Amino acid sequence: MVLVILSSLMMTLDHRQNHLEGIRSTLSLLIYPLQYVINLPIAATQWLDDSLSSRESLQEENARLKRQNTLFKARLQTLQSLKAENQRLRELLQSSKKVSERVLIAELLSVDLEPFTRQIVINKGSRDEAYLGQPLVDAEGVMGQIVHLGLFSSTAMLITDANHAIPVQVNRNGLRAIAMGTGAPDKLDIPYLPISADIVEGDLLTTSGLGGRFPAGYPVAMVTEVVKDPTLPYAVVSAMPTARLEQAREVLLLWPTTQQKDAPSDTAGESAATAPPS
Image 1 (cartoon, rainbow, N blue to C red):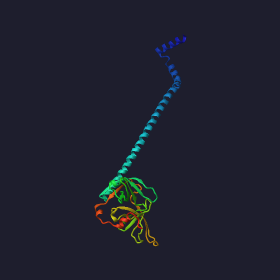
Image 2: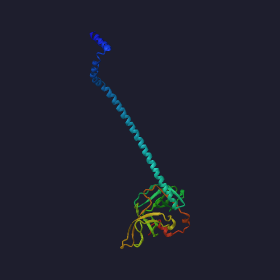
Image 3: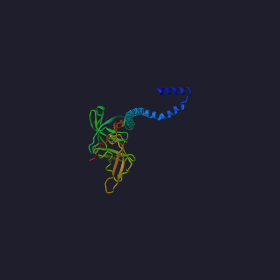
Image 4: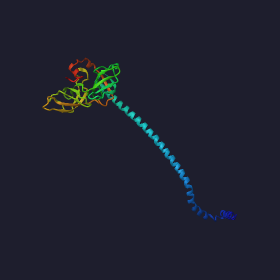
């Protein structure tokens, strides 16, 4: 009761005359650390909740961005693939203007992986008016010719096949020769050239047009090695095909031009285009 009366008296004096203001300020200063300590667990809990919520939100945002990034990369790869395919088709169509009145784009279905055998299967056959011996090219050069014909697909032998040979000429001087496959994916042999033959490294070999099977003047290979040993009867000449035989996904089927149809056939050239000389 006495404390209550004193407390009421002090409150009355403080209210009227502000005598206890200094004491209140001192007590507030002393009590503040205690209030801070008491409120600390509550503040810590709230901060932890906010932190966990922010972290979870960031993790969800990061996962969402990763999914979007993966999706965009997949779409970009598809676009790049389409762009590359479009470029290849443009190159094929551009090259078709140089070599033939009628052409047809075909796609590769499979590749023969047997040693020394370089053959491919394409998705065009007799239904598309393809024919045996029909030449195949890409934007860079001659690829080969059809050797087996089906209704919906055909098998073509590449110029690097060990059983393939094609009449060529040196673009620089017109020297005629035969380019024979070796079974290697990037090598042709040019046999039976005398030591005195005018052929050097870097010479471009083009189709000679003999026999009318391959269009004349189309790139076949680039000479990469010339060895002229006086002890040998012939020069040793190697060349690299200009066509992208190992990368091509589309090929161009050629039909003979009007001039080729009217031109007399060369029996020697025709046989040389399909098999090496005996």
